[in-house]
Length: 143
Image (cartoon, rainbow, N blue to C red):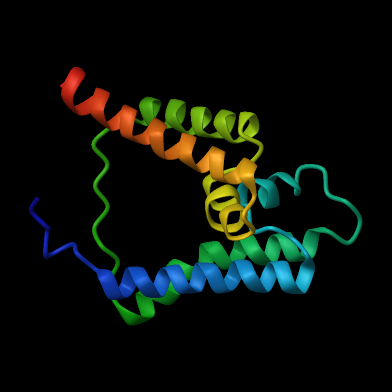
C-alpha cells in the first residue's frame, strides 16, 4: 500500500473529527437533538414553532466552517471529473437513501454509533459496504 504523503493529513483530520464529535455532543446535551444533517435540514421544510433557530444556526455553521479554515490555510483545489447530470443524479440517490435509511451517515455513523444504537450500527455497516461495492464496480468492472 502506498500513502499519498502530499494529501495525508492526520492532524487536520483528527482535529476535524474532534470538532465534529464535540459539535454532536454539545447539540445532544444542550438541545437533546441528534446531529444528523439530513434530519436537521429536513426539519426546515415543515418546521415546528420555535424549532427554526437552532436548525439554521447548525446549518450556517456547516457553511461557515470552510471560511474559518480559509483563515488558517488555503483550501485544497477542487477537482470534479464528472458531468453535472451525473452529480445531480448522484445527489438525488443519496437523498433517497437517507429517506430509506431513516437518516444520513452523520446521524447514524457519528451520533448513532456513539449512542450504541443497533439500527445505526447496521445502517453504517450498510453504508460502508455499499461504498466498497460501488468503488469496486466503478473502478474494476466498468473501468
